[in-house]
Length: 226
Length: 285
Image (tube, rainbow over all chains, first blue to last red; front, side, top):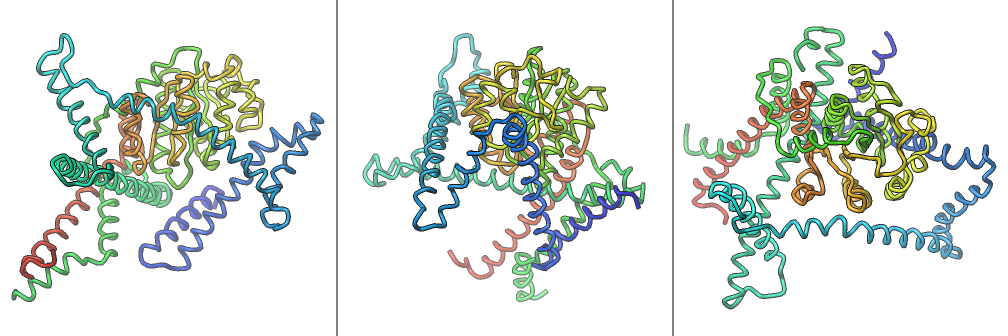
């Protein structure tokens, strides 16, 4: 058996092993689940060292004599003082530093992320110059009007400050009910996408089992246009 | 069949053991994989957006393909990456693969790009390269914006990126004509948009697993994204656009028939529910 065959068999056995969960919870499925988690963690460790730390920290420190890099793990190591009651302030010091940096970064990200989406909500609802009735119907009424109606009704659903009483309140209640329906439709679409995603993963594994694994030995399967 | 038997049937329809459903689904999947009845693949506007964005990259600029995925979502993100890579090679655009959040994806994406490169006779270092896994999330992106060679350092093989021919004229993010984020991880898009697309106006396109795609349509509507590949469907549409039918088209064909089965089961279960409720005189309300 050549090395590729070992890999093929290992992958096939792991796939089938994980799928035994479909029958019931069992040690075989658990075993392969833990192997996968272990492999991922191990790979992360090696990749972090070889593709990051070695080139950016170790080599400059050892080969280029940038001795000051020796302080980097010492600062990082302060995190572990969280386990000491007496010296926990050292951990808080470095955590505060990270919180501050993260908050600052998020503040910087916030406006580029959300501002264009807010401005994109202001869509033209009337005909533009030179626009025919057909174009107006398809590109304004069917798109922009529907967008604005859904946007306002969904926002009204999350408007909790006014009771649904009185003339205005009752109308707000009706709008929020419509908004709730639109939300349900959106959740349905999301759930549909989730089903599609899970199925894709399953089909991908069956593709592997039939084409790559069985097809490796029985050519009929490999040539089935998978 | 007596009334009692019929009532039991309506109840039984709602309580089909899940193992039978799994088996039925597996049978439909295997049937369509082995004896496919092909359905047409029509590219959507979102998919065309990615394709057009790749073609529109100016000469002299590179494309960054951030492949933040690993084995757990490979069935969707693998074909997506493959189709995007094909589109880049066909349009003769140079690209760099990188990874910010899922180190396993570095090798998986590398293999896909290498396989496609062989087909087009493309050379590593001149037509494409792999920057490898870069740890640091936001910090990496902020550094990329200012000085790419310094932020990346070494490539997948441990060679300084400044030594790669295609990277000789790449200084900062202004030398990047497009970023394509292929991911199954939530939060990566916000980082790219917040730190690169927004501040530097770098064109941005994405490819998501179907689970996470619905949450990102507002970014497409606002123009922050040029296009979006949605799960295996997006990958299949991209495969159709680059004329390289592959795994995604096969997956979507099977997917369609599996959906027919799921819809039929949902309808059957609901019929059973409604009839059982009718027999019980309106049932619980």
